[in-house]
Image 1 (spheres, rainbow over the protein chains, first blue to last red):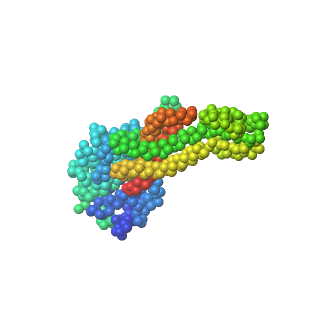
Image 2: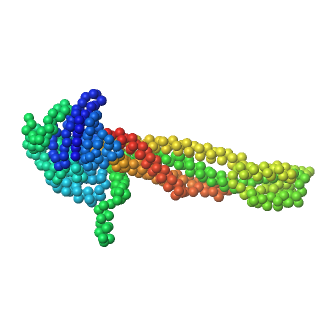
Image 3: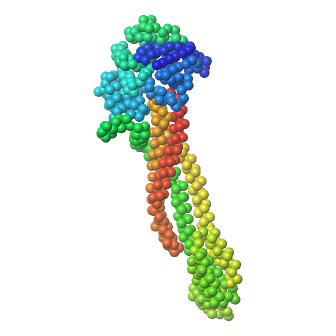
Length: 225
Length: 317
């Protein structure tokens, strides 16, 4: 599903955001990637989403070698990945249902089919009753769940989440993780970037620990300090 | 499999073409809705486009009508052959008959020197002076109505008639027609140059409007790109925005031009009738309306393509 082989990312300034990182995430596997600010978590997600290219090494996602992906094929590649952002990135002039429908709209679904899938996704995150509301009327936790519904509505094979619990209280954070687990159980691979150590410890999933762009630990379970 | 089942399957798995049509319909509606929700700026933009289109369009229409008028005057042009003094009336009539056999001559009218003198005497009120003449000073003449279009053909015919031994002088009353034709050509040239300037200006105006729409939706575009939106998916609503601005501007320009024509029609027709012309200024022709609307829409679409290509691609995710 996701394969990093000695991947490095060096910026024009000469600074390395990632240095020789290697790991693999299998189908249906859920993993965290953690580390301090500037450790390279976001860069790692950007490389998987093909918003940036690595300087050296190989990144293969869903069988696609991202070092050699033609620019015109990047949109269709991204449609197979669901992304959850820390700041939700919802469109404030669209209703909850329209926000969740965005990936389906991009994929060319008819309004009727899209609505059916949107309702199913909103039901899964417990927000079906709020489909007609606008993001501004929702709490932070609800907005995050809308973001998750949007990420999963197109039935992606991979979900990437960048600090998905960054703005949530511990209870909502656990609820969000439970939603992610549901997708893991149906074969979706998840990579969650987070610096919430206590949450990662509670979840007991594989954790990649980055420090200064280097992968310093790839534990099977949590128990981080 | 029954037709009903097959129809249901088609509905659930539409072809890419149907998907594309749906997408275009939705984007067009989205674009119109956005324009509708910013009525002031949309109206201002449409008015600016209409004003820009109106000027060259009026010049084109003016030139077209002058050309039509010129054609009518050319059809009414006459060539007068003044005959030599030693040409008898019998010879002159023979010449007239010979001229009538030519395909480029519609009719001929022989005026003997006596008829010319009588006409001069009656028309000018010089009967006393004419009575004092020892001999008739006026020559016989043949007035020819040519069956030709264009001043060049008229000149060619006059030159060939001038070669006839019975002809002393050929007079073609075409100087003012030439002046009018030159003015018409100048107006046509001005309209073309102005049209080009307006084309560039409209590209800039519409392109800038589309750029501003793109900038206003920069965050949305970034998110759409992250979820796999293609350039065409992102740009399409903006292309429709350009198209609608141009189309509405073209239609408004047509309406304004029709109103201008309507207000000028009666006074101009009065002038034409004073010149014994049957020409009347037409109201705006449907072809002109379609041309204006189509031109506006095309320029809008083109400007939007350029702007969207440039600014959507510049938004990096």
